[in-house]
Amino acid sequence: MIGKFKHGTEIFEGNVQDERVISPGGDVYDVNSLDILPPSSPSKIICVGLNYIDHAKELDMDIPDEPIIFMKPPSSVTGHGTKIIYPSCSNRVDYEAELAVIIGKQCHGIHAESAQSVIEGYTCFNDVTARDIQQKDGQWTRAKSFDTFSPIGPFISPADDFDASAANIKCSINGMSRQNSSTSRLIFDVDFLIEFISSVMTLEKGDVIATGTPPGVGELNCGDCVDVTIEGIGTLSNEVS
Image (cartoon, rainbow, N blue to C red; front, side):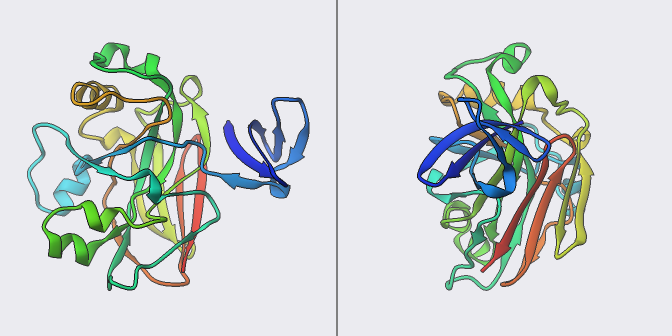
């Protein structure tokens, strides 16, 4: 696992081994003694809507013929253990647990069979959404873009160490299960998404592709603790404030 950390005034990337973090200089820290920062600093976050078969069935919607994509700004990124700020202008904020792909190098026009060569790794993502604003606006930008609405982390599982084709993905609120599915239920897999998205825009190192959410999306309230857990990566935890 790879993470980004802060120790005093020092910010560094380190290798995570159990409860230990090893810095590039060889220093060893207890992970609990460090601030865990978002593991990536994307120039953009590209999200995929309606990308789980069982989520489409849940909503009684047709399976899309091609990916439905939208974007979230980098200013919405927050890390593991931080607060999700509930906007005063919204009365309904939802969680959406997702597998995120971290791009490892600049690329454009990548074919699916070469997609793995541009992936740094994978992590957990929560596509927090002001649902009432989404419905009011009729498009998704404002509802998805509030500061703290893109929790990501805690760490990156390198591409060679993670099988994105069949990983369990869960979301729980205050310890109670709300979403429980598998990436095997994705309509468009990671390789196809990279081909599709990179045909539209250049992907930069550190960019994030959030691959869609399974069924069971629901409401967050102030004081809730939301956990996104993906097999082979870990758990992203945030409190709503």
